[in-house]
Image (tube, rainbow, N blue to C red; front, side, top):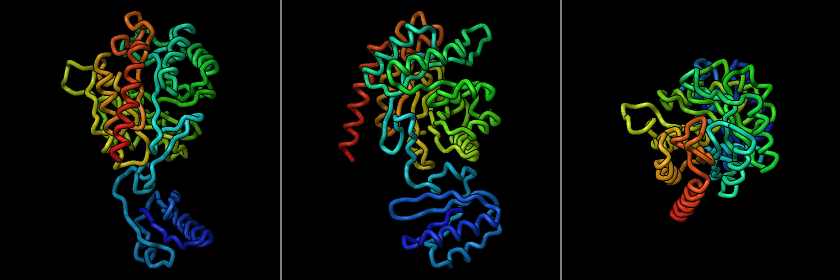
Length: 336
């Protein structure tokens, strides 16, 4: 349920109403916009008399929400959420490119890539320290050592880092990580999501390879229900019957999610396509569709990459993509 308050409502009146709602055993989410204040009620609201609430002097109207995701719902929070990733903002018109290797392999490899993608316009550095792989015999990442190398690259380049967590027990290792990524395979690892809800770090939540947008938003709801509202959604392609690409990039997710939620949405064309030559056109299309950011895999020597070499761009290729993406964003802005 959403309660829209009148502009003239005083702080004392609002606090009194919130206290009354809390006495009814519902949680209250406050959203203050430029012209109105909204109270989002989360919990069992069936016994709350909407006619009674609408009759109050300070209430403009009351709306019931049928969607199970409440905190993530745009009806609760009409304004776009802007997530601050250690100084780099995503959402609400703030655009960012996250770039780097699929996995951290060495100090020299990571620093070379970080320096080059930063010069081309990337503002966050991605790199896997813990790698979920389909085969148990594939490279699983450098783990704690990989995290240390990411932090070294951050210190030398100034770029905040994004890296994936596999297990809630690893959270102490992520104390200095700027953005914690939840991969597609863990999108519905609800115990992990609950633990991330207790943190105060931005969470990049990837859509599962066979999950609906509603399920993605419900996973975000798990984190938000724990108190952490710093969530960035990521569309990374879904599994279909198509075999020419690794997955199928669902670009319709961008406008649909923009309608459903206030959370920012970034696109990962690398995992979506699995083919390096397709990353550029899909990145450009994502920028035109209104995505709040991109996540692109870059490797200094893709043929020798220990993970996902076929979908990784070289730094030179990334530079070309970044230039085109920024140009498209400017062109779209000129049409507004």
